[in-house]
Length: 460
Image 1 (cartoon, rainbow, N blue to C red):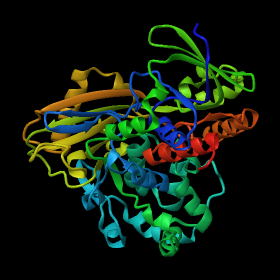
Image 2: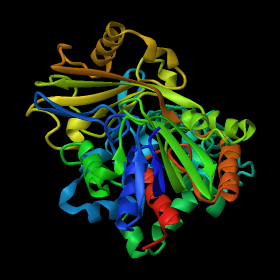
Image 3: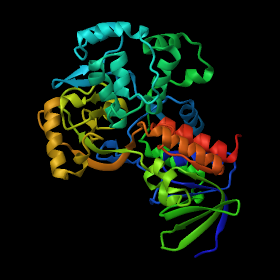
Image 4: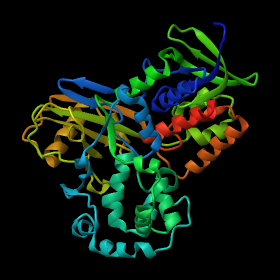
């Protein structure tokens, strides 16, 4: 065992949360070290450039829904060029009876759409007058049926949840998974009244910057990873750090790990920030009582298979929007499809197309266990049916499986969040972060990373 080194702060994990944390720690002049089990930063973010295609094997897009994300890109400048989707991103489709139907925006389109029943279309007129919910653990399914009706659940909310969480609205709890939606009802008593009043509310200069546009990065999201990595100081990172454990020691923590050569190393740190998944936290923090830790590690995850399909020449339905989502009621083998080459520039050769198809989710975990040949057969069947190419012969095909892709914020979130809060009181220099709390979006991860840096190193 080598002699321990001393650091002010140790950050565990170099995914987007960890990188956002280290970027702001560096700006504050903090003395820190990052331990990452993989051989490179970025976590599941991985851009591949091949044969004229630029594709994402992990997360594809984010939404500029937090001021911290907007300001991060402003701060990075030319080191990482923000790319936002054009107006076509507003075109979103829902599959019904084998046909793509536009998700309506506005009253008239909402009346004309075949997605919802006439009963529910009329029922929505009464939404502003219904009483607000009193159960903080009410599921999304219960909330939507109570306020809007079953067809809105089946053909608007269910595919929306599949697109974000690959989840089930009968499990998801809005208070934790969709807090803005939950608070809209709690504050204004109605989604419609709340949306109307917020539209007339005077915005601060910061709020005006929050465009809620879909974003990526010029050249792919790996460029965001590399920009944060470089500006955080590459010498502050140790990769292939396995078997990381943290234990209280001498008014701080003793962090041990095994390096790439198999040598056991130790670090004395005053503070520790964990950004790893909930499922691995018990081994990293063995000093926490199992009864407490179980409330964190029991977090449910959706397994997702991502299929990237590139066509040099596309002869099917014109991809003219964000993409399409597939409600569970349709009983198909895919969750949805993103039109990446429509959203952003230079993602496919001229006249070609770049799609990302998602499969699996909490309702169909068995899909990610299928063989590549079985998956390709399903993809061929589904694309012929819903995108209608003359031939299914992709010039690029990449399948990526994530067994623990997206955490599901259900009723157990209350206990998990309370446990994390209680641990922060008992161990004020231990910070538990990552997508197990604080939201799953890229902007949420950036916001949390900045908050972690401010709490650990102070504002500047």
